[in-house]
Image 1 (cartoon, rainbow, N blue to C red):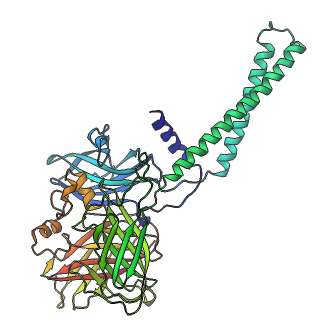
Image 2: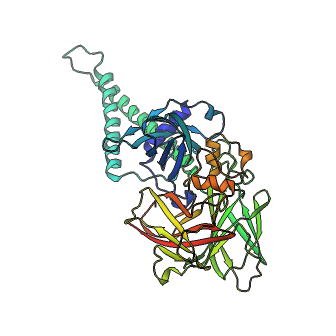
Length: 501
């Protein structure tokens, strides 16, 4: 309890101290998710804090059956603490829009969390959960005026305390109106000096304690596991490093030997050629030993590629690891695997890609682009696949168990997010949050959280040639969006550019 209290106190003041950069999820920390809870459909946005313990703000847009009330509860995604949730908090409906709710929750420790939603509405009660990775990302600097004010107040406190002690020693035994003697004044001076020294030592001890706590907190700032690519011929080895094994720190105890398959693959690897972003590959290396994945590369144009590797740990915590890989000319190649995808869009320097992307086989991918794109705003981005005649693709089929996959990448490399029609949370984490076993990792996503496209995907049937991705750009700038959809046995990759304000 004392340690928990010190952590909370530290969190309340940590925003006033040092500054460190953030690394989590390649600059895209917030969670955007569309979930079905019985007859209720929710568009959930969870904005996670930069410091832990910290407050996550939650927004819900409801559709389907009318919702009267929503209660929210935070719990760890796995472990004994997940079985003992705290009291729930009510979300507040908007006075102007009864389908929009807002709320906030404390996330008390770093790691893999979930927000549980209990709904009550016209169709009765229902519930669902959304996984939330919580991690300390930064320490903010103290503002200079506040630092000066605190220093002045501390000086007043020290001097005032010395004065109180001096007055007590000098006059506490005197009758009213009598002057103090020289001996009493000398004792008061000694007591005052002793108090100044003692108080200064107390402040120095507090200063040293604070530095130790701040250093411990800084050590827990999130850093992804290391990714080391090694190329031998056309064989790519990807080695994932371990982190500190200190079990007291959940983020520092991450392993490279606890990975869950997501959509049947332990890793989803995007390779994007730099700086033009004119070649992109969505690949799936296979696990050969703990922390070691391997694959034979398909034909790739030479150049420097930025690798973005998505993995999910056994506790549901997702990570995106990154590294650079240089492909030399004349590299021997293997054919593209059936579940892999590639594209060669125009380079960034050749102008902006709009809302229409012509695919190599005559099909076209279309983006129903919003009129304006603003940072930190939740959108449901809609993409459509049409055939060579301009008709909706009648042979659309699921790709990796989903209606589609998307990667939102900022052109300066500071943002990468691999998302699905349900949202930005890892599908294995979604399964864990809603009671599925980690052993189900190779299964397709179906059930109450899956969209209509994913339900059809699980059945292996034709699906509508339209897909939506919930997402919000985390910062202004230029982005390139890569979309994978499948028709018949062909996996298509479209590319679109977005200028975000």
